[in-house]
Image 1 (cartoon, rainbow, N blue to C red):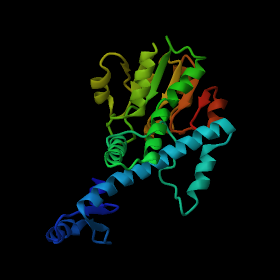
Image 2 (cartoon, helix red, strand yellow):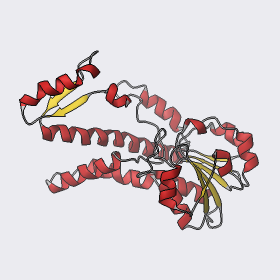
Image 3 (cartoon, rainbow, N blue to C red):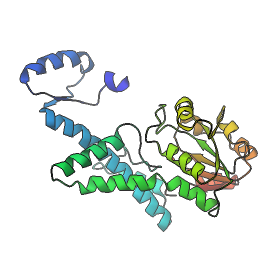
Length: 276
């Protein structure tokens, strides 16, 4: 609703100039303070939509690659991100590392753009690379858990906080959290999940293969590890003493870099973030 009422811009594809005044009248109440409507031909408008999502996906995958390099070099991706974002030519949006992008738009639009290029003999090598980076990143949280368990995932109990691909939605399509749960189950772990909005879609997806917690702390009962996969506000400032008391283990994989690493280690967690 917010995007509709206060659009950043409105891209309109027209095959006839006769439609322009009609569209302008329709959108006039929502564009009173500035003119953010851009008219173009239909093909250019469609490509603009795909290209915009591809650019944002590229920023996300780029930052994830830098985060992975930070881990190798011992750098702090939060400091690198602030340094990059302070450059006015770059800006700070979409520079947060994480478990990879998902949802109903980015993955679909990236694949559509790649396919369109292939069909018309224009290989989009950069876009293909972004897609490959994201595919690898989606396994990053599982690899961190596996390493923390010394390679022995079978029989472990893992609590997963967050199932939606991002906060403030119940959409689990192409969610990295869903990939994580699938992989954990495949490797013989037991999983308890909690999400403020996505529990019903999760039930439709997993059936009785996971335990559905009534709140975040219920998911932690007896858990060997906690994996935070979605950046819900509810997860940003939890009761860490209660977390430690509820868990059997001490592994905390923070897929959204919500917590301070030094504080978490001081509380006795074996903490792992992304690029820290």
